[in-house]
Length: 269
Ligand code: SF4
Image 1 (cartoon, rainbow, N blue to C red):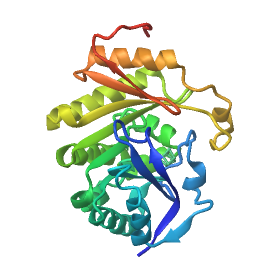
Image 2: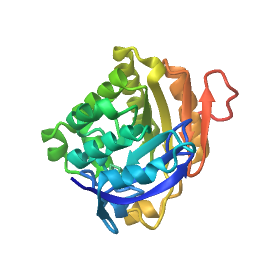
Image 3: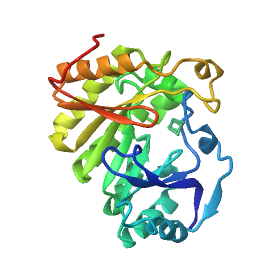
């Protein structure tokens, strides 16, 4: 069983909050987010089939420098059998494993749980608003409804919280796609799910800055500015005010900052 790989990076300090990691990009995705920043991977440009063992051996060369391997994409759970083999091989080499998912395949996450330590999951729009979810992920509403995508994303979040050491919950903030009120609503929904599981200590909430680039599939969104830093900061404070979360992270293009409750605030919504 091989995996379709776009590439890897020996060391990243921004792909996982608080953990330097080796990053592997797997090809293909079942979503078509018009603001996607990895479109060449979604469309499988420059991908190659590799033996999971070979990839794990390459990652293990970095043991000592990193403890974690972060498997991202694309959507890694689409290659369910290959992903399982890869996670197993990484674990056997003594590495910790993190998977970055859009949450649409909770059944695959459940299968790889024995080899997984950490998960990053995107909540791309309010889960209670399928029309907004459909718009954010670039799929027709009928598909989002018939595959019950928001319910599957919620289930994936629950599976991660109940079984893993940490779950990074990413809320993208893309100009002309997400209104501040959408992000707030999604944050409240996440709070409800985390509250149900009671694993507050495992949930790491991250606001994701959008950065336009030539590879973004939508020509309209390619022309938009990057998400305003003041807006991200104001949203972080608003979420801290309105929810039980005590800290929110903001991930910008090459840095991550943490905002804690009661810290000095510069902006308001
Ligand atoms: S789920 Fe992620 S990789 Fe897939 S299209 Fe959306 S942003 Fe791109």
